[in-house]
Length: 94
Image (cartoon, one colour):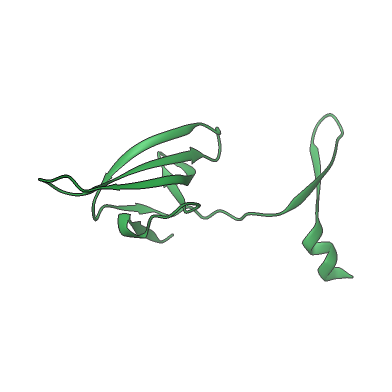
């Protein structure tokens, strides 16, 4: 998967962090009077749902996550599994 530099960070970007895919919620660039600039990033872990805060040094790169977002409609739960319908696939097949 592609690597993303801190200059490419934007809201909604999906990254791998600690082995879990995460989505950037907010990205704040900090430029102190002395020293190196940094990015203070708030992320949401897509597996656990937890919100994380992490600081990256300017120029640091992070692996991108291979995530596919689908617009699905919830149908029902039969006790052992959840069932969803893909609206886009139905439109293409008609």
